Length: 348
Image (cartoon, rainbow, N blue to C red; front, side, top):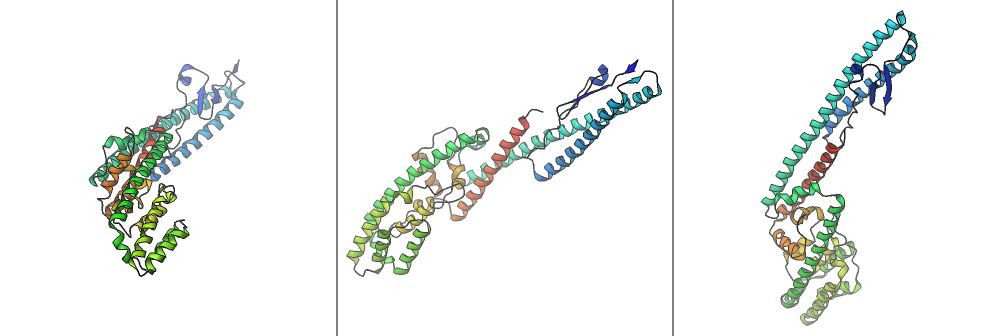
């Protein structure tokens, strides 16, 4: 009687099953989890090396199984060849059991590493939150940690809502600053001299704001000796600035870039009025203030944005820089936590 192979086919890329005997076929070879991209570089490298070594062991085992199947599929029972095949069969099964043990250990190590990464990031997020709240601009911790749970589309929608609210708040602040400038700031026209006017014109141009009439008014205020003419030119300049919607719409604000147009416009208006809110909005990026404005529970409306701007204006320049760093770190930690949780949830 001919001896049949005790080894079955390889199922998929990583599943090897035994076809002879219930003891041999009782446990299939597990898939090796992919190395999670969200892990720290040193941990990822360690697991990459370990997975590569296990993959090589599996490759050799499969190759030897294929050779065994060809050599032993048709040997006669009780022959020397049959005894040799039985011995090789036992050796292959021992190697298979050893591989399963190491594959399981690798998968467990990968899962443990992901869980540890999530725990570490959760702690970092809480510390980020507290540091931001220490600046008296943050809200409740749930508003920060809930970022982890929302989709990228939902986050994008919230960012658009935030930007729209900030724009609305900016319009209100601009209107108040312009009115204040017309009522109380016209006496400050004497502070504008030709060098300062040329600098302001350069800042406007560098920001992409080219308006011959504004430039003419700036030069007129700087060079005209008579105060009445200076005041008339100043009034015209303030009205003109308020109507330049492309300067104040914050379209050039991004995650990492502030609005150069707003900043340049606020600098010109600053000739007549000292409004820290105007200067502040020109210094903001989405990354800088997302942590203080963001909420997944409440609508970000104009009054919310105005309230947050009032809080932010109390910060020193150094504190605002700290907020920028903390906001970026918080968002990076939240993203990494989201990625790690998604990888942990992947079926094994």
